[in-house]
Figure 1: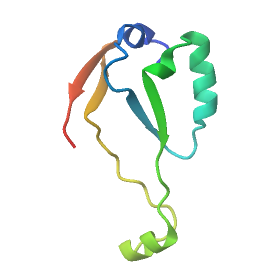
Figure 2 (figure 1 turned 45 degrees about the vertical axis):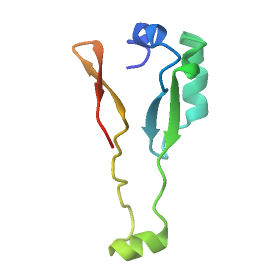
Figure 3 (figure 1 turned 30 degrees about the horizontal axis):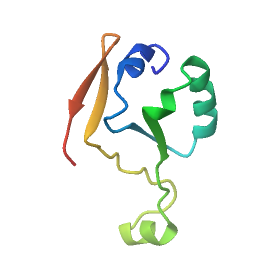
Length: 94
């Protein structure tokens, strides 16, 4: 998705907050960063990656759950949505 819409990121001003991509533990931000820099070297001035926090065993116990527990999705102030191959910005308050 990022490489197909690279023009959006190239035209995004640097003076507005970075777009945060929330990743689960299966992704490696270092590898993603390395590959994206090959496409557009300044991309990390406009986006950032954040790994979602894994719930601890005591947290799961309080919730009455065990094993795999999906982490609740978070919304930021700035959301990007891809519609028909074009990126559009939407704002949603926390």
